[in-house]
Amino acid sequence: MKIAFFGQSGPYAPIALRHLLGNACYDVTLVVEGLKKLPGRHEYKQLHPQRGPLPRGDDLGALAVAAGIPTLLTRDVNDTSTVRAIASFHPDWLVCVGFDRLFGATLLRVAQKGGLNAHPSLLPAWRGPSPIFWALRAGAKRLGVTLHLLDPREDHGPIVTQEAYAIPPRASGAEIYAIAGDVAGRLLQGALVQAAQGLLRATPQDHVRATRAPRPRPEDALVVPETWRAEHLLDFACGAPYFRAPCLQLGSETFFVRRGVKLELGRRLPAQYLLVGSTLIVACADGVVHLEIQV
Image (cartoon, rainbow, N blue to C red; front, side, top):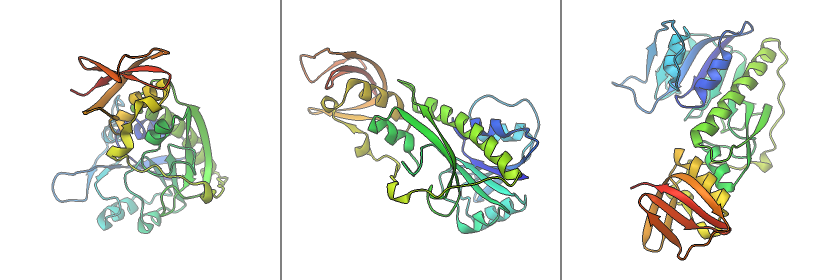
């Protein structure tokens, strides 16, 4: 069974791909990496496999090439020439683990069996490109990964399986994505074995319960600290900057957060905030939080 794997460099897709290498039930015959830009005017570039030690880090293309897998770099996965190049590998399944574009109907028809997406939330909650940001914004303590069948709509297809995990306190966005990548890889391993055996089943989503997680705008990252619990603000300040830096407007000053540092429950400040070098100390509903800010 032939798999075309789609993803992007970063802490999510490469971790999942490592789980899928060397399985006797299926073969990853193509990796497609989405990029914002490519040199020249071409819509895709092909990298030829050069087997070698698997590199560390989060470069998806480098990992695929070292694993001996032909790789396409593309800025438009739905471009006619790109779809034709993908089709030439005759994939049975398209497997997506983090991609910045929806797959069009023409691309979806390339796969003989269908497509699977590993979405980093417990669908139907937080459909869209930034579920981790919105989970942190909401103060969620748990997140998850959902495998669902691909259709032309955003994170819409029937659910194959899903698994929840606890969000570690003070985790960065990259660290949360890495946990999700490991969960996605394990779930995909099992689902692809089921698919090879003709046993894959899926259940329609409850679309009435669906919520969306769009890319955060500047106003979505705005924090009014006195209305937040200290632990909530600290966790948000640690994880959110991977997606968009939290912003605090305090009096006439505007501060952008680089990361959260620590909290002190029960402490009170003589003012709304204190600024000590690059450390901003703000009053919350139940204590204070120390934040490293951009200077």
